[in-house]
Image 1 (cartoon, helix red, strand yellow):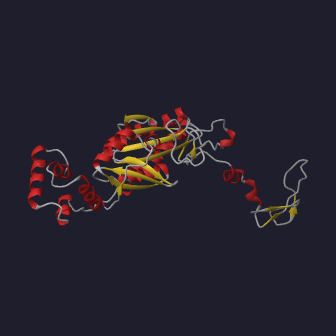
Image 2 (image 1 turned 90 degrees about the vertical axis):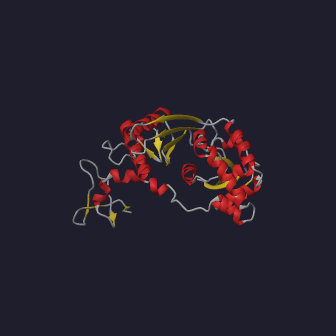
Image 3 (image 1 turned 90 degrees about the horizontal axis):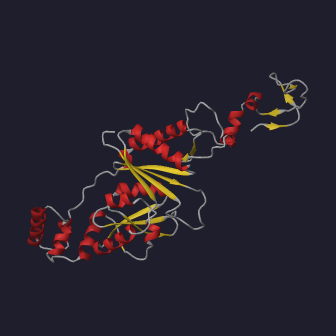
Length: 322
């Protein structure tokens, strides 16, 4: 970085005067060309935030605008048009990274074969359960085996844990009011995961009844900045925990369908402008785009998840061909 003294240097490297008229302030520059000092935009950009739209033509610094929000993924927008462009880039990133954010399909040993290999059921019991499932067209295999008293609930839970290579979780202790703020109710209804409890300040346990949705797990990790551990919870416990969480107050959530990405961009940008978000994030999971906004940067000491009144969500579905 240039070191300034009370002398100046001209283009030929000799001391000279910087300025004109009556200005007699003199500076000497060591290790740098004088032209570097004549680039206020470069110097200012390191100290003051510019508009986050890479194509912004205004050159506005945040310091020069009374407008302090909205901010999307750490980027401040100097105008609605710039916020739309920032949102478009984020949404295009999520739309284009579907494969990266998704989970590669892995072959899993069927539940019936796991129970057979453990000697818990017989071939005849498995056949009867499969026939009943096929005839009715409803229910999981484990449910039919329990109904026919071939297995108990704990045996099915243990086998599911082995099938999905995940832990068996316990339902208590947990706080449904805190857990309801982890992610929108729509995601619980659509993908079967229920936020269960926090461990320390960086780990969130999410429970599933019979299959793990890794896409949901990754989306929640990216949105909350927490490590998420997914596991199987015994069916009866899962139903109890799910009902208690669903009866707790969730953050306000807007649901909508977008015809195309352009409509999604306008909807998200309008929402950010309306709510004057001081912090916000966009993630995609399956056919949904989830936007969460924080209304304030202030957080209570030791608080990992926000309160229901501190954040607001918008969840938008988009056709697959988009």
